[in-house]
Image (cartoon, rainbow, N blue to C red; front, side, top):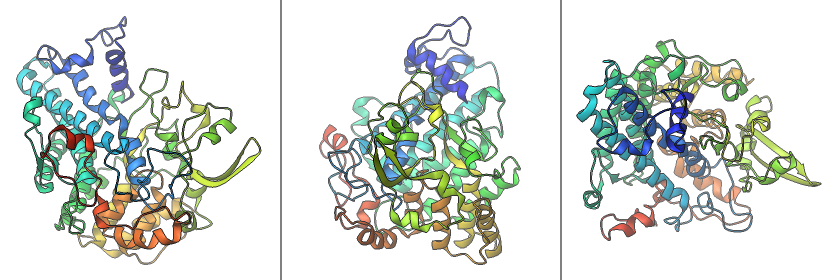
Length: 495
């Protein structure tokens, strides 16, 4: 799907090329009634819906990884945008990371709704009969992804499933989580039935039916999670069997496999490999289509020590709890984590995630890294199946153990003989460390309150963290949204 972003580079930067592919109208025109007049117009339109995923990787690292017990990211001096996220401060309503999560997802939803509206009105111009249902399925997959992101961060959110005016939007209150899930599930069910299983080289990276099945399975699992007596993503429904069935379909498709080594999953020269089910695509070259996520959790001094420019970032140290959880033989730690380095004769002893950093691939700037961000991979699907088994969704304990042992074997570890849900979450913690899943895993599994409450007093040597409350499972509604129209939204509890 690198080609998706090549299309966008021409549109966003207004470039004119010598080929028909690059000689296209600006993507900003995609919101007008006159834009959608050909196959290529609709191709650019759906690419613009994908483009709203550009901030998704940073968001998972800033709001999930940083919120979790994987990092001890209290302030090391000065005011940081991540200040208070890891420390459970109740004054986060003006935090830019939280505002971005709201605005970027709704931007993607707006683009998806506009695209679907124009597809319904002008789709007759599409000459390839296979493209119209695929385009609709792609847009609905992405809209579901944006809404699922919102629900997990904020709980109740405004439900907007069509093009509305600004004044109309100001009259739309937050909908119940159950109602938002209805749209998410409907969109993903349509996507599972209308997306292809694979693409040709030019379109590799677009959403497939297995990507939709995997995401829908995760939606069912999240809905089935603990409620914590808040209006969050967990509804306590029992849909583990639905998720289990979908995951089995993905596995039995035979299109994915575990790579033999852990580092090869994240190699810059091995993107879209056999373990990737869906990822967000990036390219470097100074076109504005690169990414920042490889360096989000890494410190400036690491880059300057290696002759690269300052990244304007400070260290978010990995927690001692996570560091101590790795067995000596676990090869994932050395690949994912750097423990200590020297800069100008000064030794930095704190550890940080270097999982996505290849210093030889630095682009034009800190925002120009070319590596893709994997949002769903085969190891995740396998371990989600094990979770469904432990939750009574089907299968046997032996199957779950076999799945986990296959992951452990790749990491250089021996077999286990039994498995509990807390043990599975610890296995997931090390497999997906630095990938932005930890907070979501803790919440879905019902373990977040016990885990974080026990973790804070041991880890917080600087005594900067606040006491954890279940209200903090959700983030606050951004103050900027509350200020748009007084009384339209009420703030989440605890803020």
